Image (tube, rainbow, N blue to C red; front, side, top):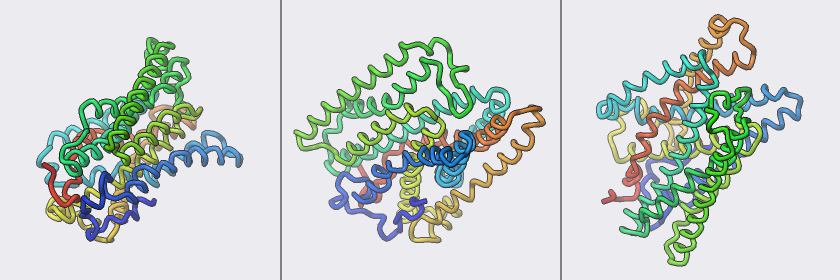
Length: 383
């Protein structure tokens, strides 16, 4: 994918703050990898529709798109987390309980895959949505951190401004999702998740509350942006990113095939994640002790001037998911005789993916608190 060719070579890692302004790295890099990469969002759904147009069964077309996204970008993004956690000796020494407790996650995934796939997918959907929103707020906070600590040395990034940004992010995904839940039509592929959602939530009030919260958040965001613009301190990179994110996240759940629709959001999310992760690793390669703490990662990082080596390592690690898929696909008919084709594939697919994906979520909730990760690239440490 394009992320693999991001120019993250050590010669260009350090960015003079007077040239980069509010941008996390540079205008071209931010637009290409953070904001305007939004063009990837509709692609999975378009290819899904094209597959149907050319005569493929809906489920076959859906699974082909899911598989391609998983291998091409979703899987590498998932595995790239471990370049900063599991494969880093310093990280393991500092946070041993985080690493050890991760073993519990595959046990839960495998158990639910066979006992209650709908419940597994319900937890997955809401944790995935939370994770995507958490990454968005993390990127927003990276912009805030740079503005407050590096560019202005004390700016208008107040607690109120932050809460308004968080408000629009945390509410934008849910109005249409709440509408589908309230009408009992919340499907992911062939799985009806409404079956395991408490009936209390399958009422119109959920849609009204979610919609009201979103409208209030939008109003507050518009007012805040106008005040900042008039005051001459509007953070344009952050604002553009937020507007695009909210527009996509609000409309995506309205599509009839939520499984493939969410793959569009996942593609954009993964693209951003890979770019930021590889950039952080390249910063450590230049300014830190990557060779000592993560020798395997350093070896692949040094193979190419850009990030192709890191992308290759992340992709190679997908072998673990393929092995899990093969094992579960083989034993599923033995454990559940007479299992139908869709359930057979979905059980193996979601077990193979979610065993690693949930560990990725778990580790990222921790990594997404490190707002100083880019500081060394600005030419100075933030105070």
